[in-house]
Length: 433
Ligand SMILES: *Cc1c(COP(=O)(O)O)cnc(C)c1O
Image 1 (cartoon, rainbow, N blue to C red):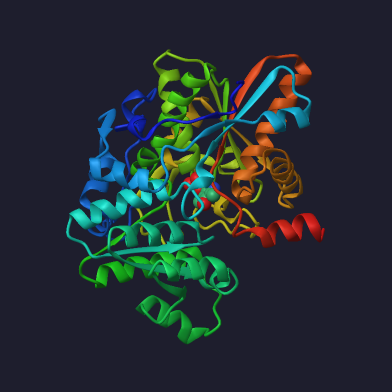
Image 2: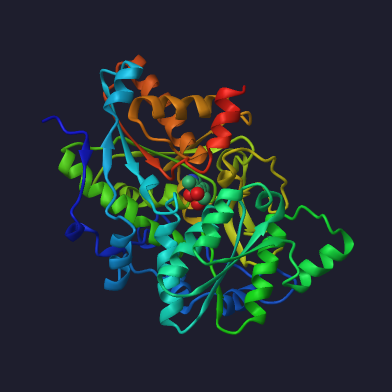
């Protein structure tokens, strides 16, 4: 049979994460303290788990995945399959181009974010913590962390930007069913929140406020740790499980990708699939290109500057060298809310700087994005997240370009999440437009 699904057995789940830092063309610029204010490094060290902090700085190329975390990954459905998109190829009339996609949408809460949430929950429990604290914008990270906390028997506290909290009822229900305490931010739980509410009781909140509330809560509650869902090195390290599986699956498929495509907000799903392949490119073991697909609302890789900037609006993080639009940049809401971030992860930025990662942006109205997602649904049968649809859009565009040029090409797209909690967006864009 000419197969269209490539799966690994549970026994073939990778046993190590891949850290690209030692393989980079030049050393990764280290984080820096800003010129004013308290030490951000000390602040970060105080709020994170020790193991994640250690991994953040690590220059070890391979980091063993503890047995207990491999068991959690398997519980969450790993390894996840790689598919050949034969029906989409047919629909597009492709003869010389082969399309593949990696199924991170099969995650319990609907996105790849579970891959790092489980790890952060595991280390927090091991270090004797009892509560995970975070902020969430679109709601995917809050759901993933709520799930991971519950599996490890920990509490979870989520500060959720009020303007989103108010209307994403289904995601809120999911987090609450998973036992999380979900606060609409600004909240009455923190001094920061109370001060803002005193000035304006109907303040819609922002990601910056939610981060500040989360950090303050962590600071004032013994036994709690703050968890971050993207951008940082240790998050991309945990996500490398995606690419490591995909490398093995392409061996089974007896094929080789020429191009890897992913959507990019902060860079965790893109880095997850791309970095293990990029490491082999840097070591001259493989040829492959990498394309990040972004929104014109947050074109950090195409319009950003490569410089030191804060990771958050509230200036709580150390300065990181990244392609950035500026940490105070306001970004218009879009359906693919998870892509609205002002900067790209330092690791991805370094690869971009060396021209190993390329990027493309799509218009704010997201029309062609939802058309691509609907074509994917109607050919392959899977309803994907609005964010992931940027990867599919770029994959289709690259496939058509190669086909027209008469080039044989193999393209792999990362499907970062499912779209079952985003049907309202599909309805608005495809049925009511
Ligand atoms: C959060 C999220 C993203 C964007 O974040 P990255 O760190 O860039 O991966 C993309 N897709 C989904 C489904 C998400 O939940």
